[in-house]
Amino acid sequence: MTGSIQTVIMERCNVKDHSFAGIYYPGSVSPEKAVIAAGGASCDEKTSVSMCRFLRKAGYNVLVLGFYMWEGLPKELVSIPVDYVENAVNWLRTEKNIRHIAMTSVSTGAGYTLLAASLIPEISCVIPVVPYDHVMEGTTNRFKRLGRSVYTWHGKDIPYAPWALLDQGLLRIFRGAVKDKKYGLKRFMRYGYDHNPVTEESRIRVENMHADVLFLAAKNDDAWPSDEAVPRMVGVLKECGYPYRVESHIYEHASHALTDGLDEMTGYAKWALNHMLPAEKKYPEECEEARQDSFQRILRFLDDWATGDDHG
Image 1 (cartoon, rainbow, N blue to C red):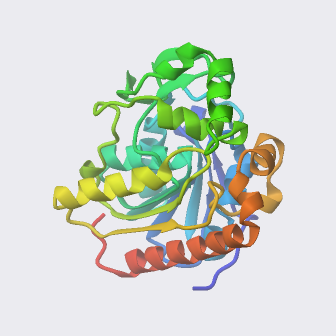
Image 2 (image 1 turned 90 degrees about the horizontal axis):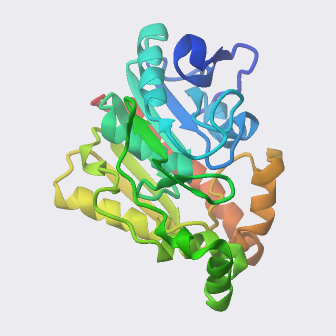
């Protein structure tokens, strides 16, 4: 597939006028199809746009969707409406004559993608990269519990798993991570997810999706257990006789930063890349190879969806 990034004709959408924040980049292929691409944790507008660079280069219609951290959106992971995605889907269908919609993102955005697809049947292709399969309690940027879900749907909290581990205090959590040699201070986020209980109620109901799905993850993920979440979700879909295409791949040596645009990252995203992902230092060549391979896997999956008998 060939194409080029077209920034001169991008179109901005905002919450006040469109009920979602995003930037639409029209492409040169598959005019009736579009990809919604969200960012990840602590990813502002610039970073979110960079992360989907390979999709825009490939020539797809891409709507880069903001769900937090963009100007005018919440700065903390709490009470984020999945309605943003629903409104974006409706806008694409009514304003851009898009008939078939895919959604993809990385990390926190991958969970948002899965949750949206489980609630919005018009999303017919889903590509969550390093996802987690549970909704958590919202927190402040200083890890203070807020007693509300990270996500809402039509004004109501999505069921979530409480961050009970935080009641121990950050100092004790840091000490626990440092004491356990398989974590260390740089992997304290993974330590937190591995040691905080979740519930069946907080599980994202992936079996409710009406979409082809490609799961990508990194083995021994430094940030959260995507390497455990992906097999769990594949198992759920297999057990329920999920009728759509399901593919998955877990990279032996890759980091949580399985995304494009690392060269353009600034601020916290760049700091986290350099200080919170040990795999990037341990396996630099393998991490880059995994990134490039993931882009090709995603594009092939979209090509098959874009040219096949789509069910969206």
